[in-house]
Length: 117
Image (tube, rainbow, N blue to C red; front, side):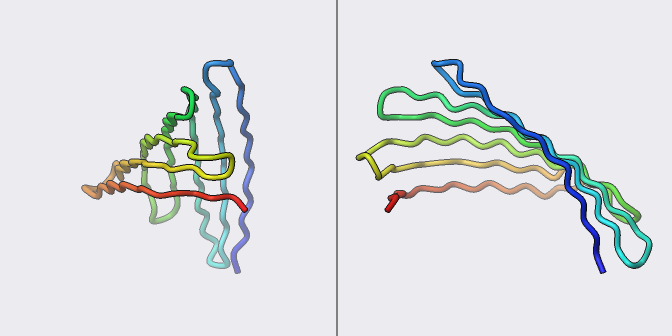
């Protein structure tokens, strides 16, 4: 049986020309085998509206430690959103993730349209 405890805090502030946000999470997971896994996660970013276009940038980092686990991950995300109408937005985004303790890298590109009903 697993027992997980998360402690999270986050916030944002609107500077007028841009909105900044930050979030922190600490997770502790205990298993029935008397092992413990701890994670610290930090995310910071900004949203910059420019007319019908909004640019978004975000950086995230996590560090996980435990009996057999010791990883550190970093991720950078960039995206642009374009307002087509009151309820429809087109978007394009890119995310690059690196696992610091290995050679694993992950690059993702996304393109789409979001409509709110």
